[in-house]
Image 1 (cartoon, rainbow, N blue to C red):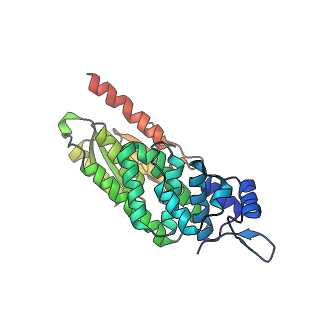
Image 2 (image 1 turned 90 degrees about the vertical axis):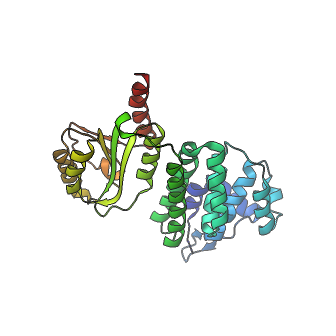
Image 3 (image 1 turned 45 degrees about the vertical axis):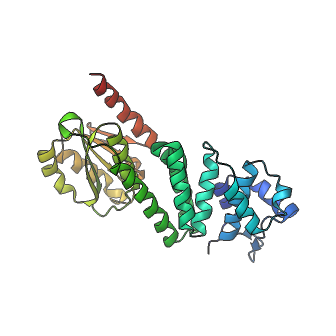
Length: 300
């Protein structure tokens, strides 16, 4: 069971801490317990209830009316709300509440509905990525367990694989070629999978090598496949003090190829990029970059 501070609830729900306190005191929306030092702490059910309350408030429900509803009535009211295609926050709150309840059917339903109504790329950018970012906050605070994280990761991965599989195949002779891979021991694949989708959707040809690839294999890959760009995501490996070594080795193995680097470790302090390397802080920066050559190529 998670233990959240009121600032955690504010960050995860989007409801200001001051408002949460008023809702507690005036309407009894939440019932926190207090530590020995008189600090409020909240559990999973508190966060789940707050997410549902925030959803109803965004739909025009008055907080005084919500306070009169039972837990079951609140859940039913959330389910029966009319769809609002552009209410991204509501979708994210629904995903978080479903994750905390280990409600796989509702997680799947919200994901499918978002993809169907928004399109896959927009659903990723406006719903799934913000959802994963909030899970990251919870993970750092120790308020999400491995089972919950695995449930979400595997569901999102399935949606990505399905979207990629549905794309029309691209012939390598007709498009710029990319190699996508994760370094040895790196297993965080979701960002790389989305890059795979985005590139293929825009008509690039992608050789997707996935997780845990020894960097020494890339020289032979370049010789056989002759890519224009190699792309990797640095999330957990290499160690921070070995990132420079990894990037330098990558540039040495593939000196004539463009290198695209993404992930937190691509932005370690003091990292010196080779002349053929570019790093992206945001996924939207990466998408902007790949839109430009694609448009130029299509215009030819």
